[in-house]
Each structure stands twice: as structure tokens, then as C-alpha cells.
Image 1 (spheres, rainbow, N blue to C red):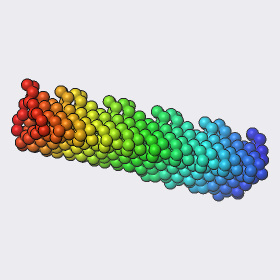
Image 2 (image 1 turned 60 degrees about the horizontal axis):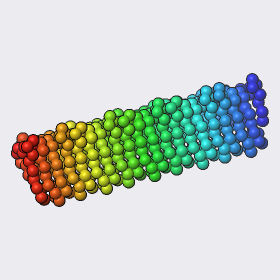
Image 3 (image 1 turned 135 degrees about the horizontal axis):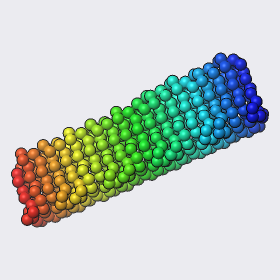
Image 4 (image 1 turned 60 degrees about the vertical axis):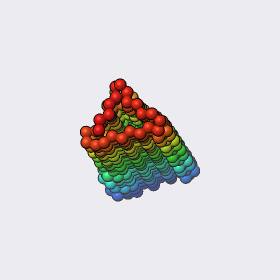
Length: 431
């Protein structure tokens, strides 16, 4: 079935049904009223080269193999009827400059193999669903739903180009899934969940750019690592990020959850680059590494918990809570760098279970009005420590060196070393 450029098929207010035994090349097709449009290629491909328009009816296009929209082509169902495009065993390709518009209805796009998607939109409560049954999905332009949800699922990889955005303005939220492959979001792209939840899942690695919503944010890399290269934030929910191996917050990245943040590197390292920020809002911050954790600036009004299950913790910047306590536990060493500080309004606990606890000169541990408990499996070398509560220091298998002022304005101080206890010339103890 071949429709030449410049020709028109007009169904008036009735239905338009076009069927080809093999391939179909379609130009301008339209209908008004409640008329629907159906286009089928029973054993071949479909090429849409012009405007396909239905006023209040649905549009359904099904190809046995591939389906392609040329640049300048459009598929528009103005009313509630919606749009369905299916490439049953082949690829679905939408060229740059084309448009799929579901009006106020649903948009369903399905490819048997790969899908390359351009601009797609719908209004009202219409939802958008995009599936690549046995392939990858590339999103190259704006995907927009007004009050409905957006769901994108690829069997292998899913990628957002720098020119792409996925925006669900209302409460519907966004879900992106790369079932067995990588989820990659290029710099300059945007994922916006509106006031709904954002769920991002990769079968292997997830590398994310800017993500924002007023709902909850969930990110998972089921068999790989997560890299956060830009701002990931929610103004009204919590953030949960889980990588099977590593989790990295890049220097250009930040994580902000109004109701808390949880970052977990299940079997690998948790690394927060200098210049980045983790902000838990009024909630708790939970940071866990399977091996080592190296942290930058962390702030919240809730509690802060940091753990390195089989490695060390290094605190390279300010880690603070204005309304909770701080608890840091490493299987081996805990290091507070010269650029680091630990401030817990309701107390601080630092534990190096089998290694040393080292606080560099120039750093500060401040327990606020709570207790400070500092424990090392081997040696403890401390700098400035202050609180209004009690202070407890122990070196279970080594010595304690106090190289700066260790003081409490309202409690007692207890220091125990298995071997030596040294108060350096620059040190003091005041309880």
C-alpha cells in the first residue's frame, strides 16, 4: 500500500482502515468526529511520512516488522482516543522533527527490537508507555505527560540523549527500566517526576544526570554501579540509591532528599567527590559501603549513619546534623581529614572496629549537647573534640594520643588505651 507525497486520505467523521499484505508507505490521513484510524502491514513494515490526525477517535498503527516516522511526520489524536504504535518484530524509529501527540489519551509505543523515540506528549490524564521487547531504547527529545504517568522499559539498555527530557508534570510519576543493560542519562538531559515518584532501574550500571521531583526517588543498579553526575533531588520525599557494586557522587553531583537520603554500595565503595553535597533535609541520612566509604559534605536535620562493612571510612569534609546524632562505623579504619569535621547536635559516635581512629590536625569533632564516643580497634590519635555531654575514648588494642583540646562543658571525660595514653604538648583534657 503506497500513498504518494501530497495525497490525502480523509475519512470525514468516519473510520479509516488501511491494510497492506506486505509494506505500507503512508502520507496524510485524517478523520473527524469520533472516527478512528487503523493502519496495518500484515507481513511488512510501515513508513509514516506525513500527518496522521484523528479528532476524537483513536489511532492504531501495527507493523509486522519495522515502523518508522519520517522527519516532519506526526501522529495526533486530539481527543481522548489516544495513540498506539507497534513494530511487532522490528524496530520503532521516530526521526528528529516528528511528533507523537496523544491529545488527552494514552500513548503506547512498542518495538519488537530497538526503539528510537523523538518528541512524544499527551495531556489530561493520559499516560505514556514505551517498550522495547528485545532491544534498547534511545530517547532523543521531550517525553511529556500532563497528569498521567510515564513508563519506559527496555529489555537491554536505555539512554537519554543530551537533548532529551522525561517530564510527568502531575502526580503520575516516571519509571525508567533497563532490564538487563545500562541506564544512561547524558549531561543536559532532565528527568522530572512532577509531584509523583521517580523510579530508575538498571540491570547493570546506572549513570544519571539531573533528576527532580516532589515525590520519592528510587535508583537501583541490580548488577553494577550507580554514578550521580548532576543534581538528584526531591522537594517533598526521600531518596534511595542502591548499587550492587559502587555508588559514586561526582564533583558535579548532589543528592537532596527533603525527607532523608539512603545511599548503599552493596559490595563496593561509596565515594563522594570533593565539591558535592548530600542533604537529607529534615530526615535521616544512611550511607553504607560494602568496602570503603569516602565522604564529602553531608548535612541534615535528622540522624546520620555511615558504615563501611568490610573497609574504612574517610571523612574529607563537614559531616553534620542540626537535630540528630552521628554514628560512623568502619570494619577497619576511620579517618577525619584535616578538611573534615563531624558535628552531631545530639552526640557523635565514631568506631574503627579492627583498625585505627585518626583525626587530623585542624579537624573538629563536636557532639553538641550529646555524648561523644570514640573507639579504635588499634590506635586512636585525636585532634580537637568538644561537647556538652560525656566523652569516652578507647583504643582496644593500642594507644591513645591526644594532640589537641579534648573537652566537655557539662560532662566527664574517660580515656582508655590498651597500651599507652599520651597527652601531647599541644593537647589538653578538660572535663
